[in-house]
Image (cartoon, rainbow, N blue to C red; front, side, top):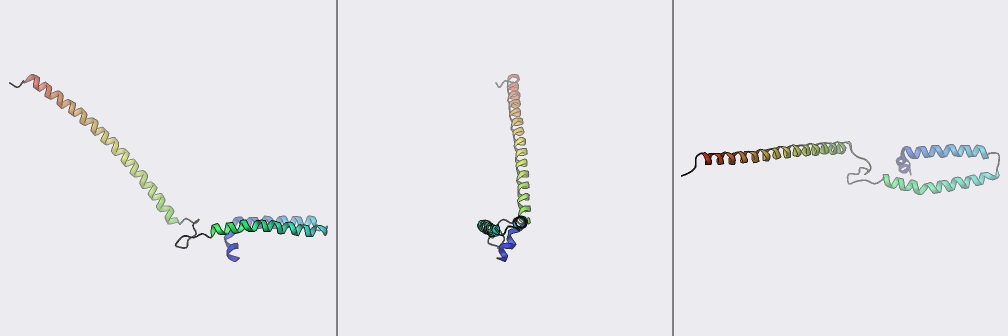
Length: 132
């Protein structure tokens, strides 16, 4: 039970505080009327019974652990940093590939232009100096 309470966290503590304040208000409001005391107890009991499965489910979620015993909802700082570095490296790789593609397209264009110039020079040379 102590483990369950420890894992509830801030949300659970807030809920307990709200319930305590509501119960104090209802007790003060209904304090003079003794007949309603039993009804108030039944309402409180019903509310707590309704909360128990939800609290158990919350505990079940937070009690899941990986092979190392670390809660699965907990992200290690080192893992977060490694994922950030991996994303950054992937972005750099993508940028480098984009730049290499641009360079290769320029080289292909230049090669085509050079090929046309060489053919043009060969044609001029053949016209000026025909082979006999």
